[in-house]
Figure 1 (spheres, rainbow, N blue to C red):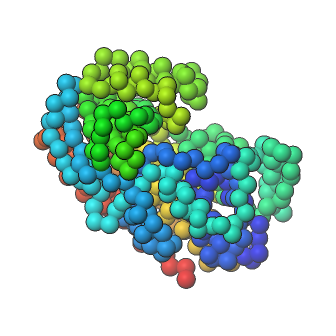
Figure 2 (tube, rainbow, N blue to C red):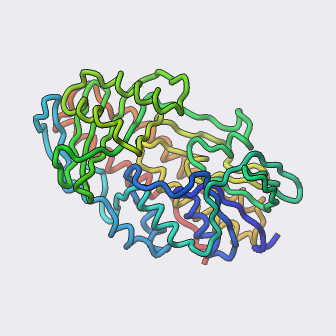
Length: 387
């Protein structure tokens, strides 16, 4: 098999465009599909850390990321009455060091998509079923098309339809870490300017910040609960669950929840990890959260996506398109980094959402531990060179 092979990439989030970039740079001709009608704007703030900053520089997008970065100048921990318990500088508040930056997910995806304008990308396109054979992967689309590909790379997120379609249930595990996360934008009714406010107590946390757009504030909720929703994708059930858990929490919580119906970008999910012994099966590979989500609380999913995309594309180049050899190396090289970050994700889930209010002492001790650990796990790999 040579580089002259048909490669389908599924998902225009972070990992999908990233691997398209590297495949194209390494001489392949991928195509990209996305089930949504367009790129999702806004979204959660993501960190570009450690080894991922080097990859972003190599892609020529690091300066763009810096230009579009979030610019929170300070973070304040408050109690249920709104009294400031303590305040820290913005980058420290986000556990960032040196050249690490934070950027909204939608802005990062926009930057990544701008690097692959020569890669065919079809929106409103999703897969009904796939059939693997000795000759390739026969893909049946929602619009009736049936196309044969040599390889399929799925970057369709933590709830990957490809993973459910291709892998047996005993080949992957979704590990619920006992917490939930929600975020959405509302009008900046508090008049915040480059400030993040957080109230954490009773194993729950509410945050609100306003950054580059003074008209908009981003609200965030995290809380511990072992309860499983009847329909995890039902937005109304999610919102009711959120309101039930934060009733009588105090501070600005009710004012934020009262504005939730106005939001058009509500996001809610369980804090989970994806655990797999292999991220490949036959001619199909998973990259990013679809294969090895470390937990949204870890802040490392974005960085694993950057590294995984680079290594998978690089190994396909090194093997001259021999996917059996490349997939084996991908699983081998990435495993230590994934394991380290998933261990970190479990630790973070246990260390945040404390029983009592976050005192200055608790916050400083936690911050020092996070900074040390995150520097280690963000650099827990030596990148191979493929050029």
